[in-house]
Length: 148
Image (cartoon, rainbow, N blue to C red; front, side):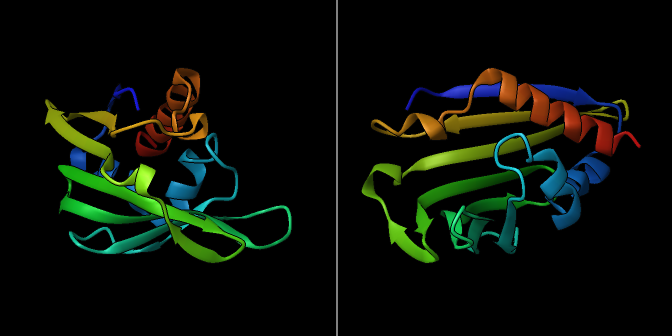
């Protein structure tokens, strides 16, 4: 997977941006450009298992099986993807091993820069490599939520 990096500056303190990004109700709003109706099950704590889910066209759960590799509240969270959920069942995928989605929050003068780094080994299906415009749209929604 080709490494990708995205960022946005939000006119809000780090703590407010962190909650806008990771609280369940606002997470569902800003991540809608990737997959409308998606949500997560788990905790944003180091070592925690996370499921990123959405109901598929058959009404079954599908999505990603991940774990929180590292979490430093209000500063950094690293998500390591391990597999997928298909037809409501978890399935590990070797080609996802080591794929990371890292979020860094840096506050300067009351504004917070959110930096997203995506990386991983090997070839990963194109659906995991989101287009820049989708990331831009999602981060702008996050900005709108956090600046309210």
